[in-house]
Image (cartoon, rainbow, N blue to C red; front, top):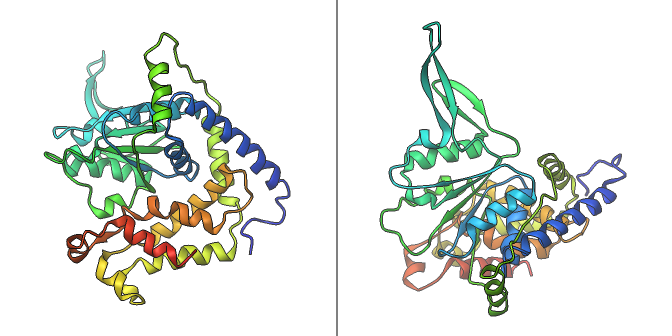
Length: 332
């Protein structure tokens, strides 16, 4: 079954044109970010799906450069906030100040915080207090903030790429499960291979200045986001998504092994995220419909932050990657 209207006869041409643009975006980003093609692709999957991503990696893996480059190439206004224990919600969303006019009249004026941007980098989000984290995560979900009873809408599109350092956990406030679920993908960033690191050495320590230019505008990105939602998804792919996500829930009761290893599983938001992500992946690859292979490839970044291992699983040395691999075996 197709979920795109039959009257839209030019969807093939639109997908081809959008795919060409996205390939140009990938090539432009790759001239600045070396050896992270998979991370770039997952970041684009997130943005084309209209979601937010959690980037996890040790310092020095170009997370900040990636966000800045994405903002430039996609034509988005971007800002960065360094999360610290003393960061307050008002430091993110903004605050009201009392001003006095030349006539002596006093009034409050709202000063917008850095969340009023199109692409926000929340650096080391787990270093801020839960109250501050919640202020950002509310904005992510509702796309507006409320200050002193007044609603202030955020720019469109609005995306958050948050980072976490997996090494230093002292003085951090891990994100609760309900807040982790707001992130569409968890993207684990690993070290580049030797060839890429060699290129990086020459490129970053020489005199040549690396300049990237806008390829898309914010309006064009929103148009592609709408196109992603029109890409048809076959019944077999929908069935695979449902089977995968539902089998990851221990209460499903169909697999005693999963019930023993998984404390809690992904909710319906995981299915929605996977449905959008496979469409975006197909568009990036220049295909007109997603496949079950897309479901298998995107299962880890969609599921790993939406599940928790039991004490028994951790005691046995079982990892989340092991569990997700076991879940995807039934789809292959």
